[in-house]
Length: 152
Image (spheres, rainbow, N blue to C red):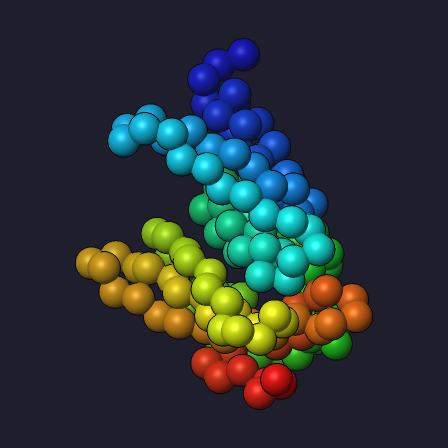
């Protein structure tokens, strides 16, 4: 197996693990060991898992099917319809609210266990923020925008 094929398979495996909400431990090649952890029962972890896998799929060649599968798994059906309408109108990716893919992402809880702020880092260190809301019952994302739904 060539290196490119092995790298793609590894990336896909990690993306799928994140999509399934599994905590992943990562080793950094420089600067010593790092760890990443989470729980599928924690909504902020689920939002972080979604964005990590989604950005990976958007970055990888041929990741369109995985992006669609991630949307189907993590987004409520009603929000998927809303997102599709937004994308048709804005001609951009509704999950990222952009036409390109960020270089990095960070998810921070807001104190409301079903809402998080996603910070996307673009070229030249520019950032944008999105507020992501998750429904309590289904643990699926029900809103992505510049402002949250205001649940407390």
